[in-house]
Image 1 (cartoon, rainbow, N blue to C red):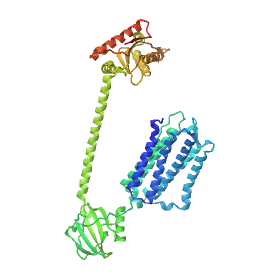
Image 2 (image 1 turned 60 degrees about the horizontal axis):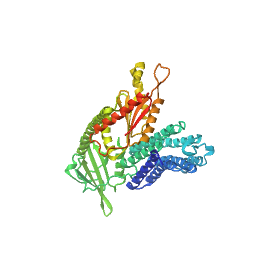
Image 3 (image 1 turned 30 degrees about the vertical axis):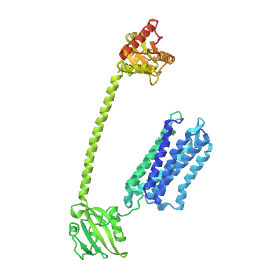
Image 4 (image 1 turned 45 degrees about the vertical axis):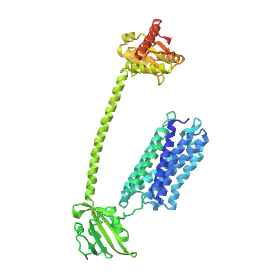
Length: 556
């Protein structure tokens, strides 16, 4: 049966597949899309291979999946490099010679992975490749992979440094975060699972998790920054626009119509010639302004829109919309509309500010709530556990047994009680001091806990006495557990400072097994419980009187 950790890679594969479907269904497919989707598909194959390796005992099939995973990882690095070149506008570098140079390392990795000469790439451990050791050729493959990443990061650096690529800087930064996250997880996987010696446990899914997180960064960039969208200027009809100022121009840029609302923006009269450069200049302009001016002057038949800070009127935010006037498919002029959006920006800024305040308050409330929860948990734990040994206290056990015993009697379920006492504990305190006595108590509790089942309950009954409740346990099972507890305590050696030999501890144990019940038991659980405690206490007294370090059982 596959363990729960094996399924991590399969879960990552399905999450990557969901992101793949999301990108495929939500955007228009372009050449850049095709490159990314191929790249994303390569990301999906790594966790899939890591999962299927663990689903078969056939060593040759496992080796095939390992080989395929590493070949795919190199293809993933190539896909990342190609995607980076297309995204940053450096695809012109992909000449035939350079393309060949890019794929030569892939061919070498493929040959190394397939032939695995003298097991210098990967070696099986325990007859299979679920656990595997890597040879020197693995580090060559890792170096090739790192080389691709360094080249990709270099082209990103060029794009971020260039002023011509300012439009794509934010998505490039987001993509860079993705590749750095993926690289960090791959290095973490290597340092934790490859570099250490084999006996150390393998931490699964690190590279797969890094791939998933990087894919999330990529999808965020696709949606938030519209990486794949064709750059267009927003089109909007004058009729559907809230117009504050209207300027109508003929085909010679002469003003043929205007309205009074235009006066705050530009003071023009009919017959004046309009020059877009009087309100928008390319000096110190951002890329959006340059694109708008270029569209306005070189593509007059296209509509264009831009929002800028209008310095002429107190740095207000103004949205400018340009649309051609067409008659029989001939352009005869243009319409420009000017809309003041300063109030909208003020409201947005104020809303964001209020949201930040609310977030700070919410975080403070969440912190207080968490502190209260932690405090309540600690108080609850303190109320039911013994402060010295950490096991349950007598009060908790009594409350628990009042309910459990009645349920056992109602449904005729067998159970057992052990009452044990540390032999000659007083002499330990007298000879070595109470601090050593406390160590003996704690060590004894640890030894007993190692022998009990998860359903069993160990509680401190008082002083050096402890009681154990075994639910749903018949006499034969209880006998085995009792002997196991006695042996565990005898085998446990308590080391005492400045004493040459460790201290050996034994226990006397009273053992009560209940498997037959009265047809009409008492309705008072406290009465029943007192009778049970009295019976098991008598058994303990008998064990101590008969010489200690023994078990006396009573069957009820």
